[in-house]
Amino acid sequence: MTTFGLLSLLLTLAVTLWSSTASASSDYHEQLFLQPLPQSSLLASFNFRSNTSQQAFDNQHFRYFPRALGQILQHVHTKELHLRFTTGRWDAESWGPRPWGGSKEGGTGVELWAWIDAPDDDEAFGKWIALTQSLSGLFCASLNFVDSTRTTRPVVSFEPTGDHQDVDGLHLLHGTLPGEVVCTENLTPFLKLLPCKGKAGISTLFDGHKLFDAAWQSMSVDMRPICTSDGDCVVQIEQTIDMVLDVERSKRPRSNPIPRPLSNELLACDTSKPYNSEDNCFPLEKGADAAWSISEVFGRTLTGVCPLTGSDGTQEHSVCLRVPHEKQVFITEGSTEIKKEDGFTRCFDPAPAQPFDLSIPEQTVDIPVPREEPILYAERTIVGHGQERGGMRIIFGNPSNTTAVDFILFESLPWFLRPYIHTLQATITGRDGIPTEIAASDLVTSTFYRPAIDRERGTQLEIALSVPAASTVTLTYDFEKAILRYTEYPPDANRGFNVAPAVIRILNVENSAPVYIRSTSLLLPLPTPDFSMPYNVIILTSTVIALAFGTVFNILVRRVVSVDEAAALGAQSLKGRLLGKLVAIRDRFRSKETKVE
Image (cartoon, rainbow, N blue to C red; front, side, top):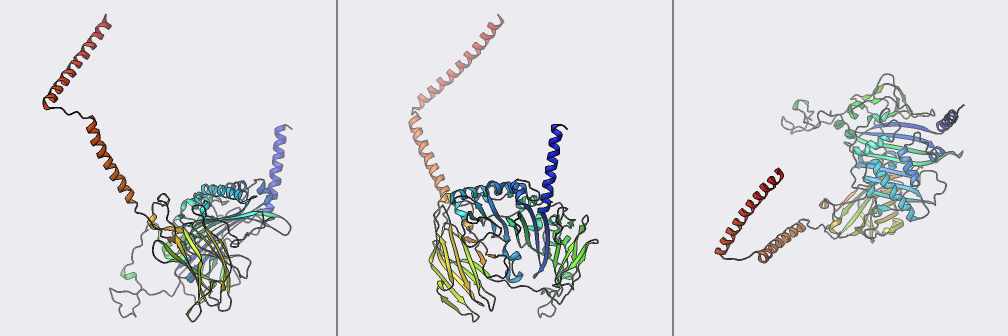
């Protein structure tokens, strides 16, 4: 056997051995969860999860784990990563608690936090900057703008969800970009990280026109190590997309992008109203739920099943729907249906090589799907007036009648918003609706405050507090607005400056999974100069300088002579130009004669 043949045999054996080992410790799962919501809305949650053995990950033998992301994480020594792209607002009063307990949701814009292995804070921050710049290029986002002013180091608001051997040696860094606009250029890199890359499975339903037309949507990427009791560790990456679609809006065909009003014959009016007539119509609420299907809502059918799913035989059902079992649901022929024992959940397994569609006709069912009550309601607004000072108001509502809610409030404020912590006040309102001012120390159990440094870092505030049962607590504090340099204002300065959403971590939850709530982002108006004045000053100054320079130049250069002298000089100059022309013509003829000789 030649040397080349021996090397080929050894390489084949190594690849076969690694493939068998990776197959035993690696798997890939994907699932779609659909749940109708009030007000003709539909929650669609896409989840993609893959595991790779720690040994294969360290040796850069990527099977299901995306190589582009894995090499970045290894280069900057990132042991756990959480990345969020979110737009819209979650309506907790109508839709109930957030999907995944809010753990897969981020603040408006882009939010990133990671645990980095580094010997000290300075080196950890250097690796953090390298991580944000690399992810900026990978996801086509503006993460390279996450500098020291947008970076914080949370103390108790976040905990690692993976299994780490030495947590004390890891550094947690958190950054936000509340003004980032999430669009299709972020969805395309997200799909490229998937094993099937949107070509098969539930990822074929992704359409940028549908996804970013939703009332609320969130894309998340989570990487963490997971260890079993036997000591085997895997590196898990989980990608999730959650969206709330308006069924009627999504069913509108792409050929009719502008909704047109219905004709009078198609309107359903409430004739019992006294003002009902041919000109006035009060809409009649439908007693039945609207009909919809996957092909109508997403604009396409589900294309088969990703062939990489369930390599270990534990693949969950591909599509699950939460509606009463009494409802009629039609699926594509060849697919299987399994109804859960709870009476409201049914799952489907599409045929491997056939398109899958699911449709629910319009029907009336008296059994409603039970809706859970959120653990806590939160609302945050900016109050006050003027260009110098303002205030922050945060309202927490506890709907429980028996249990108090303990949580941690995490505020990441920009450096030009300077809060006065000594002005922190609390007002509690019970069922009687009478507000009572109490000392903030009666509700706040602990506080961590890191003040801002101008143009170096923002303000970090973490407060642990409790809201009694059936009560509403309002926290307020004052702040001062800084005056920026004129070069620090963006082109749309009059729009306002983005303030990152607050993060609320619920502590007293029954299950082990963390529960988070994000508030909406805020717009902070700052004292803004009139940027037209520099333009006016430049124009006026340039005009004055031009006039002054022209006048002085004319005085220094121009010669003042009489009319007779000017005529004589003009004649002499004309005579000289004519003589010059004649001399030039004579010289040209002489040169030709010389050449002929």
